[in-house]
Length: 537
Ligand SMILES: Cc1cc2nc3c(=O)[nH]c(=O)nc-3n(C[C@H](O)[C@H](O)[C@H](O)COP(=O)(O)O)c2cc1C
Image (cartoon, rainbow, N blue to C red):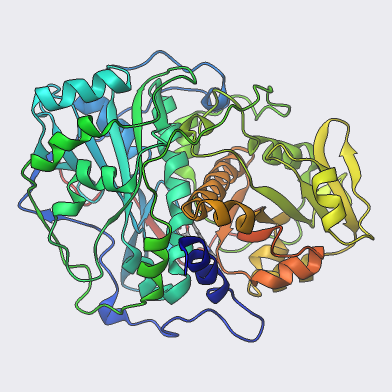
């Protein structure tokens, strides 16, 4: 099988059907629940200061074309950047159990993403390759990087700044979700990319993926290829970004091999901790992963339009406060609705715009559009809607969908179309694995992508499409908070029934992620503890 055939076969094999869910253990093997915190034993830990004051950026300015002045790189600003992207946000406690939440969400709160940095020497830190340990809010040094190795690389990438890379441990999600876990891991990566890009903006920096970098290059830079992993607990590379002062579209997006090669000779410290006493080999996941590995390529990113935001967020909010308060709703109040302008603002926020984070991350040309289930929006009739955020238009989809759909424009110049009016709470819930959150909120949505067309040519785009969905999800989470609402990502949905509803062939579009937003109902049985109460510094 070709790589494209393998990854598309993976996707087909991990669909949930009404009569059969994708294969998983089917029960929770609590004795082997993976440790959500990766530690590199023997790697020198350097504690980062916990920020006493967050950067004071208005929420609206997170998405402005120009950012605030760049803060200098120091242990304090790096600590603040990581605390506001990869850090813990709170602990929850109930019935003798306690679990940590993080700034970014994760399917099942299992957190498969790990963050690594390659830093120049700054006061208090030697130049090196570091792993970020969120539990300790510390950087663990895996390798020293001599200045003669760092300088040519940093000069190529823009001078002042550092590299921030992500990797994934599939087992953390596979423990609970079995074969479908590879999808969830990639959605999580997209959430993390957005969290990092927005935290960079808070500090006046820009987070720019080096889209041409190959996975082997990332492994070599981080030493992932020279680490003795416990079976099935390895970290695989996702992507690498340059974080530094803002730069234009022409900023480099490739890593010349001669700048990567010296890293292969650096001595790598630290033995990864064992995450579970016993692991299960869901072999379809490493097969899918191998098929979707990214080779070194020319730059992938494309030019985006520079449209202004049509629906500005409420004034007076601080960006860091919104980022810190983000949570998933566990239930929604089905008796409350939202205003049409809030609904339109939430959708508008997902539109890719040049110079605006998180789109400055430049993962790939936007390709994801939204099918909406509108339940309770004042001034907008309940029903099925289509929102073209990627730059495509109704004419691209109309001929492919059910002929009875109206495709009636909702607002002039806004790419939102009514397909069919009527109560769709039941459809939304049913399609999202019968989860009530999809029918009780103000609206729910499915993120649709032309998977077969894009992945057929370049299998690694399977991951990028999921990352784009995660990134859209992260924007929706924050925008919901900003409007006094709450969102929840939904990875559990029945795949083909979404196609049946639209009447569209999976060859053209497939659903990759669902989401729901509304007025949350709080679970008062849960107690909340501060994020870093366990560290007595
Ligand atoms: C990719 C993804 C898929 C998710 N799928 C579901 C889901 O199907 N149902 C659900 O109730 N929550 C879902 N969630 C929400 C997570 O359970 C939640 O993020 C996690 O418990 C951490 O809580 P927090 O978001 O409040 O930090 C999903 C989150 C992500 C990122």
